[in-house]
Image (cartoon, rainbow, N blue to C red; front, side):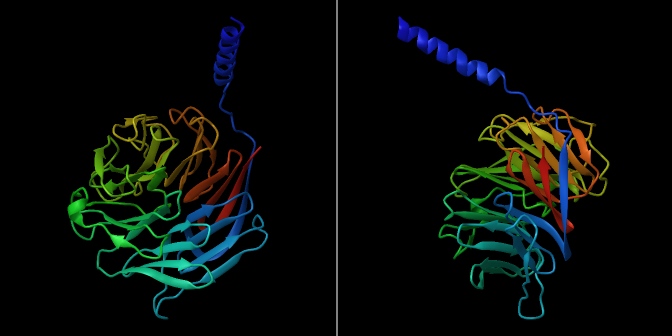
Length: 346
């Protein structure tokens, strides 16, 4: 009998702890900005409160390991005449990988040397985002169609070799459907599952549960129909609960059908905060350890925050950023035009 009562007590204790969870009303925060000259930075990889890596336009790749006091920055050139513009970045324990937009697409592996591990030449080539799975052997990068399907390249040896998936093994794209190289966040990976968000003619979600071997594609009620409309960023808190954000880049003050959430792993989506702010945004991220309730989003229209899983939002700052990447519940790194910043929540 005592054992039975103990089990009941423990159960009530855990339920009580769960019920006591409350999201924060964030009002005290600090944004410390670091000037990075001559580069527009859309891709960052945050390691901890002191360390962040970035890749930007004009061949700039760099990092800080002391919280922004000093920066190690280098400029990459290709064949002396081409300066790659980077919008994709990922990092393993051993190497940094940076992938350029436009023709030719150049994927650099950077450790003690700078080695090009993948090159693709095509008048339509344009890669948008790149990430590794947790095993750091399998990686994925996504780009706009060069034929009638998305461009997806994979590696399974830690990034030494990459191969492009044939169109016959991928969902077909509508003419005018593509991706946005806005913040390196139109790919999200959890365990073996990867989601990719599209825009333009259609705003849809590509999903693979086997690291990119097979794919499904799902429609969304998101704004879509022409070039600048669609999903710019996707994030998942767990394998079921996710959020997408974007809008119309050419009409940044519009807020119609530009935010949606899923509770079934991306198969179906529900528009939230419709015709309410935030308006156009280029990046959305869940705050770690906050039960999927707290979310930040950034863009050319400032920084906004939700503490109810995306149903309502509060504007925190007018400052423009392209991307945000949390390292813990109180700290995130941000990137923008000629700047990187650190957000500290008190």
